[in-house]
Length: 387
Image (cartoon, rainbow, N blue to C red):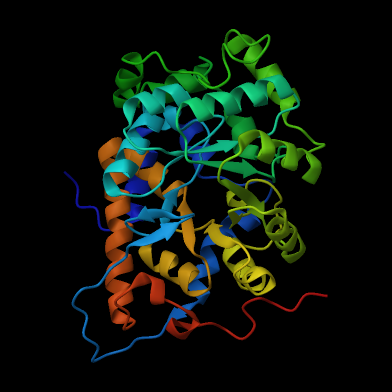
């Protein structure tokens, strides 16, 4: 067993084990990837304020996200095609999250279906919905999510039109992969991944194939998906979905103060400050840079979560100290899944928890809920001055 000290160790293992197209799908952004890079690099500009001579016994990272108790304020973000990083990946990630005591969010574009994950877990998880033009499919999906016992709906707002990701086009990304010569040569070096995939029947989009009208197999899936993201999504349609769902609602993809105020007035249980991991609007500001103005804009009107660029427990600490009530990790747990399956997701969570716990202590805090701006040293020009 290799020594794993940080998320970067899991990333290196993931790169060696997973097929190139799926690693690149995880580790990429749109166009120039400027926002993708800034999501991480902007965290590095923030420093922590060290405090000493404080009794550190009895520390706690426990908190709540939308009223649900969590072992630490970290949820697993929705990631499409998770089941292509590792066989039955969504099931393995959900189990790891449940065992650790943090929320898991299943993507609409998952390989394992919502029914698969519900059957393999014992506690409610969250479900992320992409709004499609086909209202019959969307309404049917919501009914399936209710039946599966999901405790929150995460509605993604920033994917009305798909941003272009060059690596996916060059790699011919598909699930399952098309057996072109470059793909076959790559898979020949990823035999461990291939052997696991041979043992499962879950190799396509389980929430869609057999459920969407006219999509009975993978050959019809690509054209359906390309046409279905709804460019007319607006607050009226969001209200329809809210009423149809009737449960806790989290709005994901907020990166603007005005949008945050609208979401708060709308009555969302939480918003996620997010730029889709730098995979949509390249050139947008990083999530951590936009977090403070959004916190100032809506205050305590709505619970604020943050997603994007978190690769350590210190990043979690910084986001919480800047006003987030919770955080989401995507790539950090996908590295673990791709590297070691369910055990790798657990390891990723352990790494982040340990870093959060130790860094919190060295900042003089015993309770994660006490973190605030007083724990940080932030450059005066961190948010930037934009004309």
